[in-house]
Length: 583
Image 1 (tube, rainbow, N blue to C red):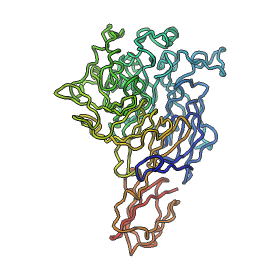
Image 2 (tube, rainbow, N blue to C red):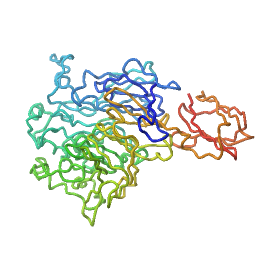
Image 3 (cartoon, rainbow, N blue to C red):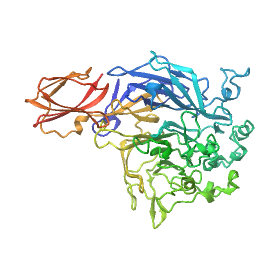
Image 4 (spheres, helix red, strand yellow):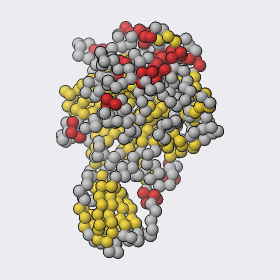
């Protein structure tokens, strides 16, 4: 195990970064089951590995639990983009994955022309969403490959079109109401102003193959079309892949239509998104899946972090980048063939207040500005949305007229992060939101509001520029409450932890109160109490799970799940707080 002390890594006092695992091939992300006893890591080439918690560390299974590398198109920044577990994974074993498909597999699989050793890259293809069932209870853990179900992209015409070398998105995750969210890119050129028929793209091949409708040959403006899967947050029924009736553009006569699946739009390359735990409704009919944080990778000037708390919101791309108009796209004269050739620029003006339209189907007709946008280049500059007498302005973080205090920063590739639950990273970190940048490799902390006006009240730095090695995903582990992140460049998985002894106010020195054994199999003994005391135990979410009067040298049996806990013992004179590991 490798520990990077906070002096070297320049983390604040009490925080440290520890290598958890290494040796992965282009690691893409990490997720955990509900208890944190199983850790899943996926690689860009199409492998998923599982590691099991043995009471003190994660033990990696030697072989992949799932291998779809034959199907995955692993080229440029395409590949196995995202992986998530069903909310009931521990009983149903269902997993979901979003990836870019090798054209050879897309066009020829199941025919005599198919060659599993052939890869057709740098040609038109699609992104696909698929579900598998893992064989829960098997050891080693295995996948039931016969359970494969394609939820999005079962044919060339039903996937998310890929017409260039990037901008596919994306993330798949479950909303708090049990619906499935997927972020997709505009799939336009990154090297030119793409308003359709860009010579460096595969638009004609995509049209010929039925991957792209001729009406969608508008380049980056696909993000502004509710009839295109590109540049969106999709909200799907996880059993069918169809749209959800409470979606803003749902068509009752055709729940499988593109419009029926769209939740939010106007995005360029939303490679990573996350959702705030406990937000929204648990009823999908309410149309309130939770507060969604979307990091949208920008083009030449700005990186965006959007917060979508309702359906139909429009991030503005390509008419806007950051808080302001993108002049070249805005003035290009491009029209929407699916809506009577109306100018795209006429359908998405800047807002004049923080109030959203009450009609979800009409929200697309106003730019929903990012909650913070940071600039490319060598100078720190970060801007947030505000209004001055009904006119949209974009003050700098901490500057005059800014609703957001804190530090400015710079970067090149926005990566959405994680909302912190519980006190495992210190009581001051609870409820904060961490986000990062893949190129600059800093980690920042956002203090969030209720969203009545702006969503971010303060931004501070947790880790400086150069902290990671291509951070592309972060996740909080429910077992210990720490934040785990992956470095794509060196194939490592790290965790950021916190020394809780620096976060405690104590009446007297507690060194003479002992809790042992620690880790424990479920039975502990407490020594050092004057007579008797009160024992309280909290999980990593801050919930009290045990409370009892105790005597000195008393042996206590705990009926608690394996994991990390905070133990508080008080005897009227002293207060002792420590972490406890239950194997």
